[in-house]
Length: 118
Length: 116
Image (cartoon, rainbow over all chains, first blue to last red; front, side, top):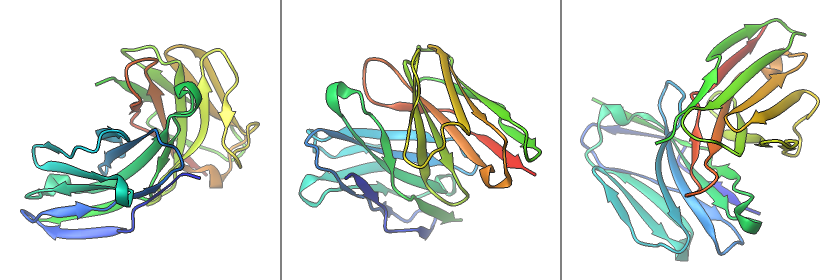
């Protein structure tokens, strides 16, 4: 069965610190997709990144970077030089392809609440 | 990115009444939409998968007679909470998936339901 674990319930940092949010997943499929979403206090989910299981290249987008390691089933997210606006709940999610790509259900982790103090 | 809207954003209803929540994909046709439920400080739990023109697929433990889903067009899915009770109070979020071009789900802004 598929599962996503975000062991860090809450993280508090001071502005300009770097912070890494951990995500560990379980799946039996060889083809799957991993996602990160941001949920600010307004509640709307903001898509950050999608990574498929065949692409282990790390990615950097501005202050955000992602480290995907299949060997440890992890897909960690780092924010460099954090800002107050980064304060939100961050969710890691897993989607298995399923037969003919039809499944596509997103399995969410429990989320990590990041609080960036000024 | 794609735009998904939800209406209403907030609703308060009395126990025993029914409430309908709409989810619309504004700039693309969505053959598949999803309905999630989120309790305070908790994760999103998938309730059902809604496919245009066919019956929704409900997740285990979700009462299909209580949470009626209709996906009558390629841009609209509705969730009706029937005979609502206070324990149905929650944040309901829909998402829509484009039929081609990737597996992203585009999320609506959510609907806060409070049953008094």
